[in-house]
Image (cartoon, rainbow, N blue to C red; front, side, top):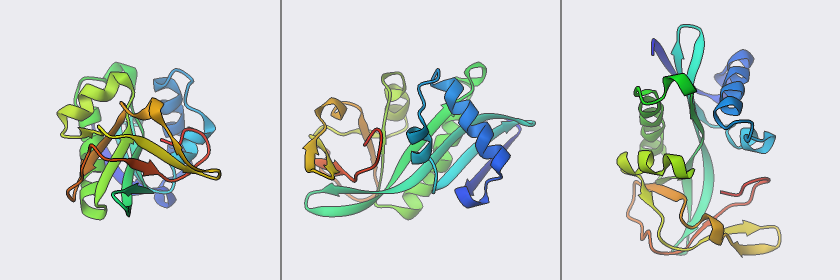
Length: 176
């Protein structure tokens, strides 16, 4: 890794955003939708470069999560990926370290939805698996998201009961 940058979406050149989208498409084997990309925009991005090649990306966007009767501003981590040939070399840790700094500096908690392959990585970094029930605030009202219960992780900056209920705000595509 020869350089690293942290920028808000509005500061990122179009060519860099295109490179990030291409990296995410590759890393998720074509299973990274336009909605997934939209979820990654509007916040702070961390970019890892090797010369002119983008080798790592992640973003933190603001969301509202409801827990214990409070609507909390959450730094929600999206679009984390490392180029296949560069994994297990500290690139993902560098990207996440920058995003965690943003979360700790700006939000009462961080949150993310982890793939099965990434769960051990986040746990090793101190993220806590949410052990309570999950919900989404949808246009039809609050709906249970039981299929997400085992994959939501939080990085509490303030004390939280990780066995309680957690409700995310609505968005198109994957709500978590």
